[in-house]
Image (tube, rainbow, N blue to C red; front, side):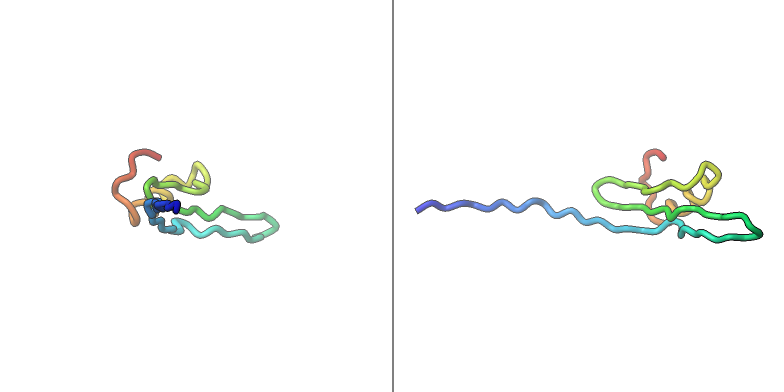
Length: 73
């Protein structure tokens, strides 16, 4: 008789937080758009789509609501 022990992988929990809702609209013949910025919290912090260079304050404000241990951006 052969027996096998099954080792389970440690479970990692993740949470997803929208830091900024994206948008797209036409105003006076000009397209205005920006992406959705999302924070994934788990063993590592991951920011998906950091928006534009002009959105630094929006990004940092959103991050501050969800974590205090961010090492760098």
